[in-house]
View 1 (cartoon, rainbow, N blue to C red):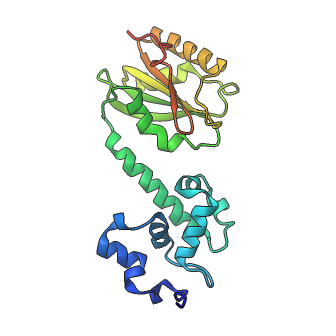
View 2 (view 1 turned 180 degrees about the vertical axis):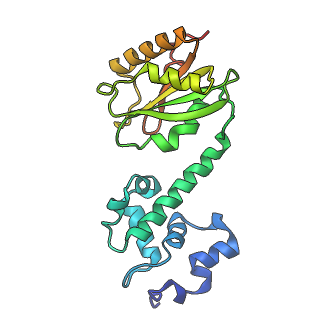
View 3 (view 1 turned 30 degrees about the vertical axis):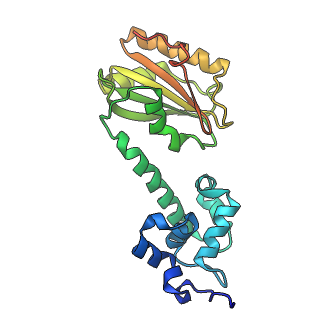
Length: 232
């Protein structure tokens, strides 16, 4: 049996990813086939499918691919700025689609709800980010802001800025968030100390801290679920 021709356009129609998508729907395609449609072309003797399979193998799947910067992707033979931008844009659209169910004014009921809101954007960050979700008295989302970046042990996490933003948005409560690039969500002594400091300061401003979530690689730690934040 002879080998397929190197150009996908010369493949039998029922084997071409784009035609398979149009005829059978997106569910019928593998990750490599979907990625090859985004890439559109390969390089030299390698087809877009060859390039897609290489990327998924090289970076251990879509999640690993998502962690790569444009510069890192461009180190792969056959990936220039245009293809790198296409990959990053497609992956970002996928994350935003998942998160659209948590649109503005969506009510947050528990720690799992807030985890689902931020997980895809925070779990693979290579440096710490401290974010605050501002809520109405009915736990509806008003805004989500990144206020500080860098290790919480080194950054000055200012309760004043958190409170000022809450007052500006007429928020009744807040949820604190930060990630651990190590992947392990258990709180450090610094995490506990900063949380107590913020809770105390917000109490004087009549703003309730509902929770503080630490986002790990595939899990999270909730201060409220562990009884470390007193609820009104």
